[in-house]
Length: 250
Image 1 (tube, rainbow, N blue to C red):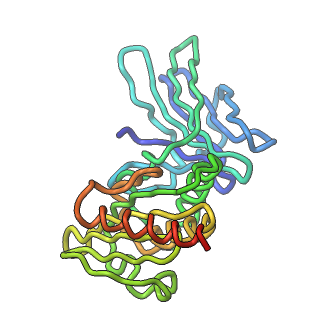
Image 2 (image 1 turned 180 degrees about the vertical axis):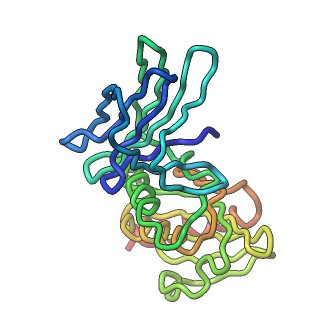
């Protein structure tokens, strides 16, 4: 995965060197909805942006940003996160032209994401992604998070009132309308599958955010997906289906 520039309200601009003669400034528009692009002849101001490199971290940048180059073309990806939007821009730049594709940010952003202390911006992006998924108004929400963490959920208030079932190297937490399936892969590596009824949509979001805060690294995030179909997951689905059937019949 290629590095991405992240612009947010705390870090609103990136100066990108296209060639020795041309520098472009990318900044957040006044309405906080779009990306503004303008040439700058002299760098009278510094970049103030974040550079996200998968498996390495999220870094503050105040230097000129160097895009990826191939021949006369330059390529850069910019994520725009504000209180009003979450978008990703893929740009192809040349001496004369700018070609831009805009689309919604997806969950691939968090593949290889290193969580730093008090990572407010990463948490905001995670929250927006989940809410974007929940806007589909599905009857059941699913999520797979592959994480490196010392304590994924073992001492959390979220699971204190849930039933627990041990399945080999897995733990299943469940109650009416919600299941959390935790599969241990190594000493501190876990695959966590969530299956929640729409009735518990807010709790679904809160569980994901808590897992994020407890993680050192998010290896993968798949909204709308669960882990591979094995004996433990079959038990998860059976328990969830029985609980939902009982709840709806009452």
